[in-house]
Image 1 (cartoon, rainbow, N blue to C red):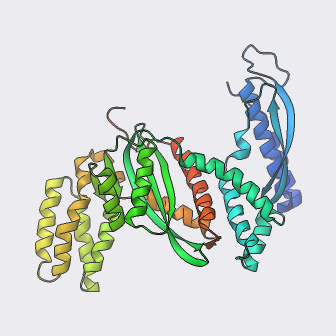
Image 2 (cartoon, rainbow, N blue to C red):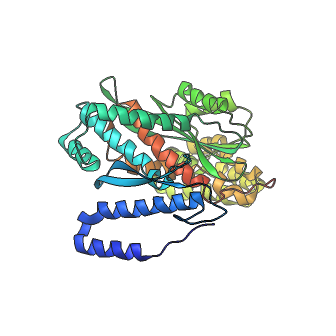
Image 3 (tube, rainbow, N blue to C red):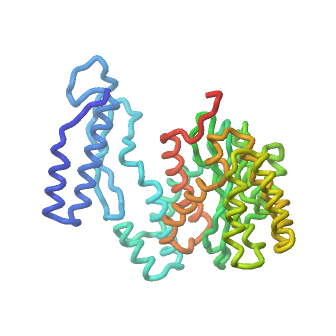
Length: 387
């Protein structure tokens, strides 16, 4: 049973916004979140305040004040308590995790003396007040415990594994370095996506990818039927070493981009791109292989390096034909991780240069944890026959 409430509250808030403008936003947030937490406790107890019902699961026990620093300043919330314990409102925590990580990343830049006046001003605006090194360390420790537990959680069966990397600027040993962010996502037996792991590494060298994949296996990842990734040399070697028996689908989008590097004249690019798309979009593998053979022959004389490259590399993008046709669109590329990468970029853009690897891992882990939670409670991504 879910208990309903009247709808006078939104009207009151709209009136308040009209009267006070954006200055009234913190108070509006306080009222809305307090009401959401109160209703959450009501649903948890299966009873309204003072209501007598056989389905009651416990009793309310007042409220506990809590101060939270947000983008709009410090807000004082009244957190509902229950006499029996074991209840904490998700309404207060949901969505705040990655914001805390962003605040911490900016605050660390300010505290460690590597920030500009602009970053200092942003930190002040986001946190609502000056941030000391002690406050940063304490808050970081609490957040790191949650994120570390998430990164180490058991994985279980993963049917499809997607692998990709992006780069962020991080200060390492006094120098600004482009460090690799290794990311793995997967589709479980239930057909839903989730983020499996993330690592901040100095590069995409084999040693880093291999350690990353070995960690996924150590956490119980099993049952993989297909790996989808680009063909970075380090990743290829690590994949063969750790997951060598698993079929591999090379990302078709990256394949097409790679092919353009071998086109001798700019005027040929459109034609080559169209030929590759035809190879990938035909209805079955035999037709695709036949068209590939014709395309290789077509460019043998006028673009010999391209022809040789296509003959060797394009077949690595045809593994998808061995799987159900209704899955092809979501197995042929790493586009779902590309969109994740774009979201990370949108959220890390304000930091620009992370003060250390820990700050980088903290913020990106928080973002990915948030994305994964949305995926796991969202719609089914792939439907498997045995489900």
